[in-house]
Every structure is written in structure tokens, then in C-alpha cells.
Amino acid sequence: MRVIKFFILMVLLTLFLTSAAPVRASFLGDIFDSLKQLLIPNVTPAKLTVDSAITQAADEDENHNGQVDAGEIVTFSYTITNPTKNEYAFSTLNTNIPRDNLNFIHDIKGTSSLSDADKTITIPNLRINPQSELIISFKARTNYSSDELILSTEPELLTQDKQSLLKSGRKTIQAKPLKDNEIPNMIKLKTQEP
Image (cartoon, rainbow, N blue to C red; front, side):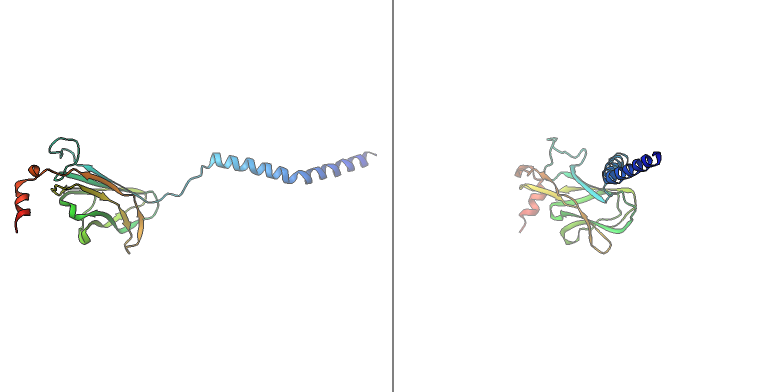
């Protein structure tokens, strides 16, 4: 009699375990997924970025009015961040700055050269090392003008083969126009010549 009770108990236990197995597996899977999310955060893959800024150059507010006026100097700066393990050699940063609004480009940092071909400023031959940050900046004088000037940059990073790696958002700054009596006499004379 004991053997029969034991056998019936084993059959019932087996039926219970096999019928409850999907529920238990699903339950254990949910617990495992929850623990995995807690222990291993959902991380998006690192990617190359470029950020830009246009600011009034320090100590260059000639009339001390706290804003950029035509004829004053501004600083363009670019920060290229490469958190990846890839190196990007001979890259080009196309700033998309309209060259005809600027003159006297100087105080270049973070690169050995600039180009202003095709009426825009580009920064060629960049080496962007893995897991590093490259900061590039330069100053330029805005043109003297009695019209409002909008200075802008929309940086695009290109590969050695001139393929687009990434494009960043457009940044702008407004240069307040000068009144006729504020434009230097030498500039007025050049614009009045036949």
C-alpha cells in the first residue's frame, strides 16, 4: 500500500511540476530580466559629437554695451568629442561660416591651418584620436556695417574621403549695425571711391 501511495504522489507531483513549468519559467525569466536591467543599465553606444559656439571675444567690447557690434571681434569655438575606439585621421571640419561677413581671422588654436576657399571656413587635416576631445577656436573681426549682420556656424565633420561623419546644429549671433557716424572714416572713404 505504501508503494502505491508513493507512486500516486510521484505522478501527481510530476503532473504539477510539468503543468506549472511554463508559469515558473516565465516568472523566473521576468525576475532575471528585472535584475539584468538593474545591474546592467541600458547604455546607448558612444558616438562622435561636435559642439560649437560663437561668443564675443573677451575684452573686445569696444563701446562696452555688452553686445556684439559690427566691427568687433568674436570667437568661434568647436569641441569634437570622440568617446569611441576609432581614430579619424585627415578629417575636415566644415564650419559653414559665410566668409564674407568676417575679416582679420587670428588667434587660431587647436589646429595648424584654416582654409577659406569656396566662401566658407574649413579646418582640414584633423586627427581625432580615440577616446579624446579636440578643441579648436579662432577669433575674427565682424565686418563694419550699417546693416545687421547675422553670423552663423553649422559644423559638419567630413572623413578623409569627404563623406559626412556628422552634422551639428546651427548656432547664430547677431552683430548690431553701426550708425554712419560710428563707421571709421577710412572705411567710409574706401566705400565711396568710384
